[in-house]
Image 1 (tube, rainbow, N blue to C red):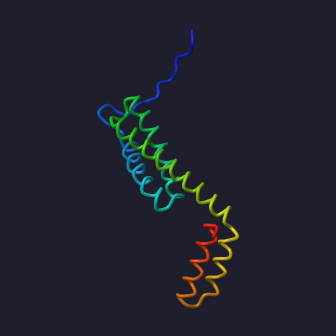
Image 2: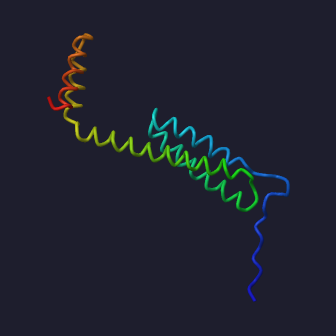
Length: 133
């Protein structure tokens, strides 16, 4: 005979703990906003949304929460925000790595430009160098 396993106490009857599912959904939507405005923020918020969504779904499975749909939606939107943010950061990193010399030249040109016309020339030169002209 195996010793009796101690029972993990669930939430008291009648009390639901839907906070993580709600938080997952809010963070998931925020990750979709951040993925375009500030991709590093989209990564952080997306990770939190996925984690909170998974914990929220587990709470539903244990009968401690009733908002499975919100938790799942939060995990999905957080995952999308996370994935798109990582892809955008990879594209940006690749661009910077590939065009490092042109970026340095452009930066130096802007430092020496004292008029708007000179800055416009810097921008045109940079665009032409990136395009390979």
